[in-house]
Length: 498
Image (tube, rainbow, N blue to C red; front, side):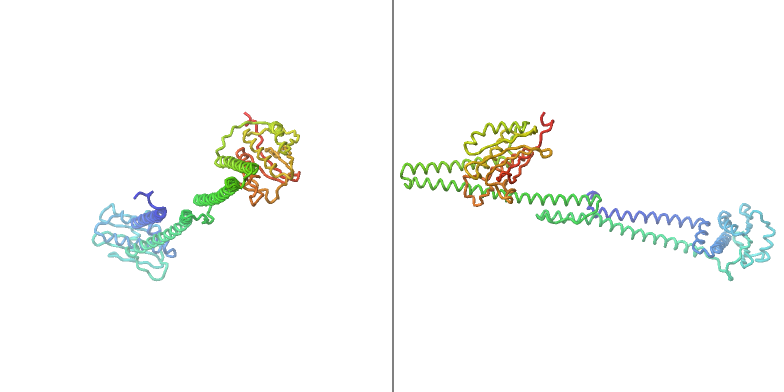
């Protein structure tokens, strides 16, 4: 199995294990080197003893050196190199050394010393044969004679004993055991510290990485089950925390998308219910009048003509409804090919009103364009914007107070947008119902009895077209006492006019 195929948890365990094992191995290697060095370097041995027993480190160093000299003198073949480090230790403590050996290159005398004086002092204290040591408060005198090698090592120095009784020299085995035990204890203690520190860091790293990932896994499993309400707890600001934050933001966006989808689905259900209701009303009328003709209820030509006219009116109502519905569905599916052109809003409205005002006046709708100095230009599709104006004026016509309705068109600038106002003096709408006017199939006639009066799609179509233009529409209470529709369009910039 390749490393990248391992789980993140195993990778962290391996990494943490290496973080612990490598320092321990390095520490053991360093300890082994130190042990070897202490074993073969007398100076280091003495320093170690001084560190272990600082109150009598000098005495112990001298004892160790004396023990080493005696052991070397008893060997069959004596070499001065083997005791050179011990000689330096004793000379550092103030001891003068004299060696007498068969080999001339093994003879040694401390520089500046008198051999006859040394031999005289040693003979007086330790005799002239064998090995002996005298160490008291007056100083140190020793004589070591190797019977097999014939080598004699003598020394005299002002090294008083630190205690009343003369302690026996520390054997080599005991000395090495103490040093080795001390170093091994140091290595074990340090290794335990590294192990505990590594375990603590591993737990800390696990809490910083694995815990957030586990929370993400649970949230992902909840999303898979369709539960989008499983919110992640607050995380840090590091890379893992940023990833968790992005994941939770994705969850919230999915939740918002689901809520929008549910609202859209509810709107579509309402749309189809409205369609069925509005189509059923004229269909029922057509069926009733047709049955009246077929059953002989309309016997006279005048009554038959009346029934036929009502059938024609109901069919026309259905035709208008299906036409509006087709327009709305085309806009709802974004199937709206636009031919853009940049025009002066004032000139466009003036010409359009002048062109259609006579026909509207015959129907009792009187359009007036208020004078304005604004020369703002807008970017529109000529045909679709004309459809917007037509739907607004038809809405004013349907909800008039009497036989006539007066509509006032005006222009004003609101920041970087142009506001086109359509005020009428009709029956108006309650303020609570203003935001609902642009919903599909919404009519103030909640019973939906007057299907011929309106389909409930006109203002919904207006909003869709305005949205396609990059603008918006809102409804207000008119100062004329009726309803005011406000079309908001971006004012065209120089770049839009090219």
